Image (cartoon, rainbow, N blue to C red):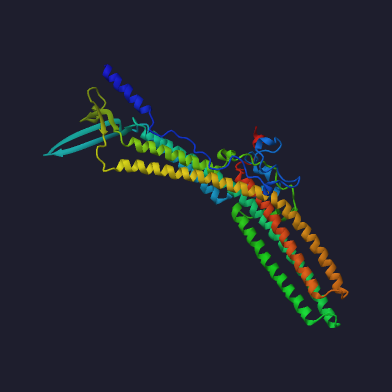
Length: 482
């Protein structure tokens, strides 16, 4: 009796053990603070808090990942587009279905820890040498239940759980990308519409200049060369109108595909966003360590790494005996009416054990593969951190420098407009040549294009910064939920 009790206790102890390696999060292979220098110095009162300051430095500016997208994007049209995309986008729908698939796979793996109990019955009639025999059985039992003494099934269950959590993080990453893409596509549409207006206004100005040049040639104040140059400038502007008309149509198609439905009727209403300095909420970059718990792609990589760690435990367990149990209990009778009477009981109990002795190195190779896969996942995890650090640092550099760049562009447009007005007035009085006027026209057009392009780059960079800091996973800010 003592020997049996000791055997049971040993079995219980073995079943409670785990052969998984102790998991330790790899050290982040990046600096503990964001880069500093001239490119990261915040310029202007309307820009966000200091790029290199940690999140705790300013209680008034929340960490980006804590700000819901409804609070970050302040334009109602953009909020509506993002909501439609989250409801209808097919990529996000596929990502959600993949999460459900991995969750079901986890439940399948978890179910292997418990025995499967089936009930069955049979009626058999046999004729042999003219004699007919009858056999009736009814039983309840389990077939080939593996008793997880060495934790193989539990390791596989942990791996399946980590895969499920990894897929959930992947779905969140898909949502962040979708939110940022919709915002960027809407800004691109606004930019191309602004460029179309610039090109259209330029066509009107060039047409007026061409008509004036033709009139002046008739009275001998301009040459045929001046007319041809004016005609060339007008044709170039018309080509730009056609190009931006096409771009606007394509932008609308892209945006429609992103939101998964037709564009709202009120999309074209409201002010342009390119000149707005209050389109986005102010957010703080926090510290690089914050990315480890807030960036979904890093979370996804770590869950994948934990799953590989659990797989090593399953591979180690393959070196130990595999114990299975088959058991059943029921009744058997030659007469159906006597099937459940006393004395018809029947049972079977058939434990089995399989001990690996010689497998030509298969188990060792499987363990080596599991360890190598973990090393690969460690490298992938570290690369995800490095990529995140680079993306945030680049966005922080853009947040500071685009403010100066757009301000310089505005000065450029103002100067170019003054230059064009002066050149036009002097050409009409015959003081300057047509070449001076033509140069002024092209300078103004270039300056206006550059301003719109850099305004788009500035706003797109703010969207990127919000995304790479882990923002966009929730519609509402964390503070609003508490």
